[in-house]
Amino acid sequence: KPVPDQPEVDDDEDDILPPRNFTQKQLLHFDGKEDENTQETKSIYLSLNGVVFDVSDGKDFYGPEGPYELFAGHECGVALAKMSFDKEFLDDMEGCKNMNFGEKCELDNWLMRFEHERRYPIRGRLIPDDKMPDPTRIISKEVLAENGGSGKVPEGYAVAPIYVGADDKVFDMSFGGNLFYGPDCSYEVFAGEDATRALALMSLKAEDAKNPDISDLDEKKIKILQDWIKTFEVKKNYPIVGKLDKRK
Image 1 (cartoon, one colour):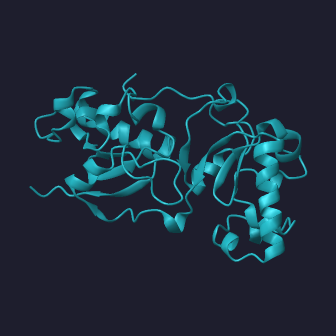
Image 2 (cartoon, rainbow, N blue to C red; image 1 turned 180 degrees about the vertical axis):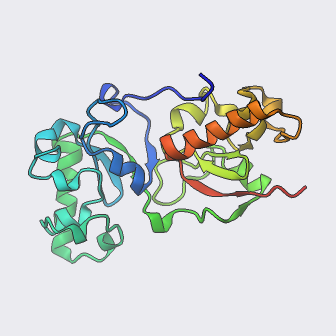
């Protein structure tokens, strides 16, 4: 088929997935309900003060019809610390910094229970929307190259950013694309590069990844590039973290 795609990763079959970063939109996907596209039951993730746990083994509690169903797919550190089912306490990362002593102790107890008693796998870290990079900022070639997956891990992140340029956009593949764009992975050649031409040609050659010029490509190749970008944005929900500096 003409639309490019990436292999799907079945979280339910692999308890040793590498850690990744999550946006709030990505976390919402993991609510334990049936996936509309695959008709398969989704895993159940939730976040406690930014630490994302896979609580699928506790589906009777956190899954559909469970007593804690409200928390699935959300940051719920404040809600659990307050022992509240009020939706105003969901997705409140900032609130975790403003708890009283008793609430902080209760949150620590939940973290201990999840990690050591229930042994729920940790899947990564949640980056709240207000801590995400500005998608309209201009990213230079140098900054793009510095974020190829082996750089410094920003505060609150699980792994270092993996920037990939496509047309005029820069995506951060560390938000779920580690298995494809990380070190020693299939599409590693794109990491830290303006991969516009390589994506259009569906090429893994380093020379194509380092040459973003598409002025000589026909409409069919441009359509392939557009399909890649649609996959990144719509299907994978990789966050856009800036715009490429296309000045010569």
